[in-house]
Amino acid sequence: MKTRIASWDCTIPGAGIGERAKACPRCSDLMLVVQTLRQVRNETVESAPIAAPGVLWWRAQMRRRSGAVELMTRPIALVEKLALVILAAGFFCLAAWQWNQIADWAPLLANLAHANASVVETLRAPLAGAGGWMLALALAGFLTLALFGGLAVYLLVEKE
Image: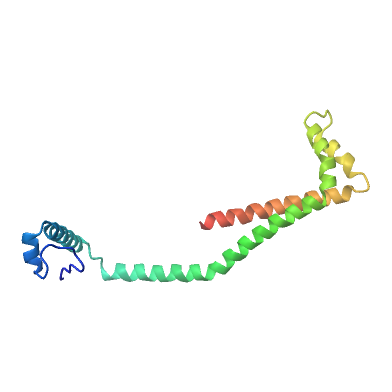
């Protein structure tokens, strides 16, 4: 390996590297650094353990397989993230659409802890009205979204 001093500002123009290293302190320092780096590199290369061919082959196969799996699961991960965004947008739209009913339920839920009646009796009264089926359907939908949303988050976190 040759040491090149490309555009080095040296006081001895046209001299060889050995002559520069002897006469010029900058070139001397440069040669010392170059020699030290070469020595460290050679020691590192010599001390590096060489693995058995079987181990190298196995590692290459594992890299190839993991690369193939990543390539195949990339579209699935993209669809999962897209589904999570759509789920969040759908929940937001549902909440905006049914805001009046949600606002009607807020005092009921606030008084639920202080009520003397049981939870079933407290929830049965609003469901007995004409719009009760809509509320029950919204509650079932919310629980379903929460279940699948939790599952989607679990699957996304598990991969990382």
